[in-house]
Image 1 (cartoon, rainbow, N blue to C red):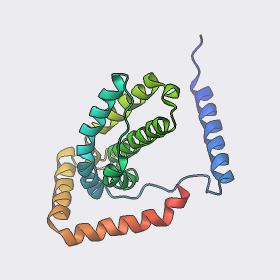
Image 2: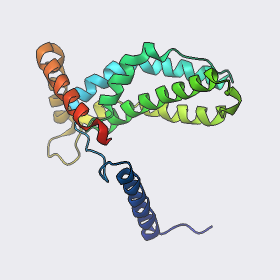
Image 3: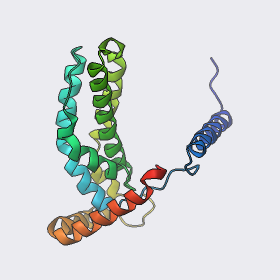
Image 4: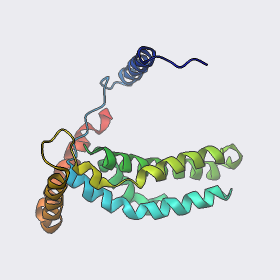
Length: 196
């Protein structure tokens, strides 16, 4: 099997981009989704709020790995679902990936819950679900603090990290400022949600 050239890969990538754009247009959306907008300091705090979900996801994956399908009351996980929505829109790569991964684990739980409720447990491909959960757990283990570094900046990694830590601490220690930034982010999310 011959390897594809860079030009062939770029052509396929462009074709896929155009296909996705056509699907979005057919759904009444713009060809490209809105850009991520949540600032990194707020995103780091959101990722820290999602951190306890990792243990829940690991325990869930262990049960699925044993071959058992269990129903999970995801209404008790609503705070994680909401936080993940906003975190997935962070301009920081790791925070966005953490938020998206939490959303995907919750989607997997919803899908398996539906299969159990409808008596379709046999339709669930446990091996596939485990592979996907493994990917999501891997991404959820990323450090949101790695987003503090911008390689294009002339500042050192250490200086960037210290500035980010100071801003995160400022938000954590000023509830009014944190709530104002959080409210602004949610307002913007609600304005663009239909375009996602």
